[in-house]
Length: 124
Image (cartoon, rainbow, N blue to C red; front, side):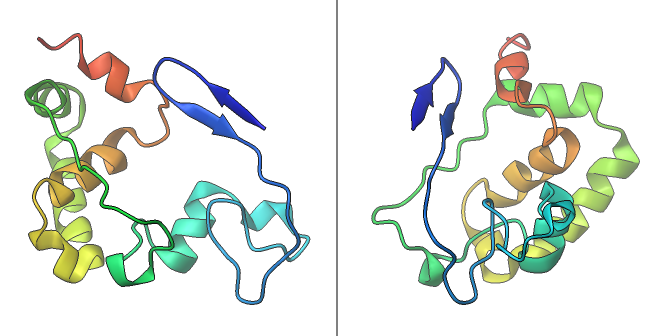
Protein backbone atom coordinates (compact mmCIF):
# COMPACT_ATOMS: atom_id res chain seq x y z
CA UNK A 1 0.00 0.00 0.00
CA UNK A 2 1.34 3.46 -0.90
CA UNK A 3 -0.02 6.87 0.11
CA UNK A 4 1.72 9.83 -1.51
CA UNK A 5 1.45 13.23 0.17
CA UNK A 6 2.91 16.62 -0.78
CA UNK A 7 6.09 16.18 1.25
CA UNK A 8 6.37 12.46 2.04
CA UNK A 9 5.19 8.97 1.15
CA UNK A 10 3.64 6.38 3.48
CA UNK A 11 4.40 2.82 2.39
CA UNK A 12 3.18 -0.44 3.91
CA UNK A 13 5.20 -3.52 2.97
CA UNK A 14 3.92 -6.98 3.83
CA UNK A 15 6.54 -9.72 3.89
CA UNK A 16 7.94 -12.53 6.01
CA UNK A 17 10.96 -12.01 8.25
CA UNK A 18 14.39 -12.43 6.65
CA UNK A 19 17.52 -13.66 8.48
CA UNK A 20 19.35 -10.70 10.05
CA UNK A 21 16.62 -8.25 9.05
CA UNK A 22 16.59 -4.94 10.88
CA UNK A 23 15.81 -1.34 10.02
CA UNK A 24 12.88 0.99 9.52
CA UNK A 25 10.42 -1.92 9.57
CA UNK A 26 11.86 -3.31 12.81
CA UNK A 27 13.66 -6.57 13.45
CA UNK A 28 10.70 -8.98 13.51
CA UNK A 29 11.50 -10.33 16.97
CA UNK A 30 7.90 -9.80 18.13
CA UNK A 31 8.89 -7.01 20.55
CA UNK A 32 7.42 -3.78 19.16
CA UNK A 33 9.00 -1.73 21.95
CA UNK A 34 12.44 -2.09 20.32
CA UNK A 35 11.20 -0.92 16.91
CA UNK A 36 11.25 2.81 17.70
CA UNK A 37 13.43 5.15 15.64
CA UNK A 38 15.79 5.62 18.59
CA UNK A 39 16.29 1.89 19.26
CA UNK A 40 16.72 1.06 15.57
CA UNK A 41 19.31 3.83 15.14
CA UNK A 42 21.11 2.55 18.25
CA UNK A 43 21.33 -0.94 16.71
CA UNK A 44 22.16 -0.16 13.08
CA UNK A 45 22.95 3.56 12.82
CA UNK A 46 21.31 6.37 10.93
CA UNK A 47 22.62 5.83 7.41
CA UNK A 48 23.01 2.96 4.97
CA UNK A 49 26.49 2.71 3.51
CA UNK A 50 26.51 2.64 -0.32
CA UNK A 51 27.99 -0.87 -0.31
CA UNK A 52 25.01 -2.09 1.78
CA UNK A 53 22.25 -0.42 -0.25
CA UNK A 54 19.79 -2.68 -2.03
CA UNK A 55 18.58 0.23 -4.19
CA UNK A 56 19.97 1.25 -7.54
CA UNK A 57 21.05 4.83 -8.17
CA UNK A 58 22.25 7.47 -5.76
CA UNK A 59 20.19 9.49 -3.34
CA UNK A 60 20.49 13.25 -3.65
CA UNK A 61 21.44 14.63 -0.25
CA UNK A 62 19.74 18.01 -0.23
CA UNK A 63 20.55 20.72 2.28
CA UNK A 64 19.14 24.13 1.42
CA UNK A 65 20.07 27.60 2.70
CA UNK A 66 16.62 27.65 4.33
CA UNK A 67 17.43 24.46 6.23
CA UNK A 68 20.71 26.06 7.37
CA UNK A 69 18.82 29.16 8.61
CA UNK A 70 16.27 27.00 10.45
CA UNK A 71 18.99 24.97 12.11
CA UNK A 72 20.78 28.15 13.25
CA UNK A 73 17.53 29.64 14.59
CA UNK A 74 15.87 26.59 16.16
CA UNK A 75 18.58 24.12 17.12
CA UNK A 76 20.68 25.08 20.14
CA UNK A 77 24.40 25.64 19.56
CA UNK A 78 25.27 22.82 21.97
CA UNK A 79 22.96 20.37 20.18
CA UNK A 80 24.43 21.34 16.79
CA UNK A 81 27.98 20.83 18.09
CA UNK A 82 27.10 17.45 19.57
CA UNK A 83 25.29 16.48 16.36
CA UNK A 84 28.24 17.50 14.18
CA UNK A 85 30.65 15.41 16.25
CA UNK A 86 28.32 12.38 16.44
CA UNK A 87 27.36 12.54 12.76
CA UNK A 88 30.98 12.82 11.61
CA UNK A 89 31.93 9.82 13.73
CA UNK A 90 28.87 7.70 12.78
CA UNK A 91 29.15 8.44 9.09
CA UNK A 92 32.82 7.52 8.82
CA UNK A 93 33.87 7.70 5.15
CA UNK A 94 30.38 8.97 4.22
CA UNK A 95 31.17 12.22 6.06
CA UNK A 96 33.09 13.30 2.96
CA UNK A 97 29.93 13.14 0.79
CA UNK A 98 28.58 16.61 0.04
CA UNK A 99 25.90 17.72 2.54
CA UNK A 100 25.95 14.39 4.41
CA UNK A 101 27.12 15.77 7.80
CA UNK A 102 24.84 18.84 7.77
CA UNK A 103 21.91 16.69 6.63
CA UNK A 104 22.59 14.30 9.51
CA UNK A 105 22.79 17.30 11.89
CA UNK A 106 19.41 18.53 10.62
CA UNK A 107 17.97 15.05 11.22
CA UNK A 108 19.43 15.06 14.74
CA UNK A 109 17.89 18.44 15.49
CA UNK A 110 14.50 17.90 13.82
CA UNK A 111 14.25 14.18 12.93
CA UNK A 112 11.14 13.60 15.00
CA UNK A 113 9.30 16.41 13.18
CA UNK A 114 7.92 14.98 9.90
CA UNK A 115 7.20 18.51 8.67
CA UNK A 116 10.67 19.96 9.38
CA UNK A 117 11.69 20.27 5.72
CA UNK A 118 8.42 21.97 4.86
CA UNK A 119 8.85 24.32 7.88
CA UNK A 120 12.39 25.14 6.71
CA UNK A 121 10.92 26.61 3.52
CA UNK A 122 9.52 29.47 5.61
CA UNK A 123 13.12 30.64 6.16
CA UNK A 124 13.41 32.26 2.72
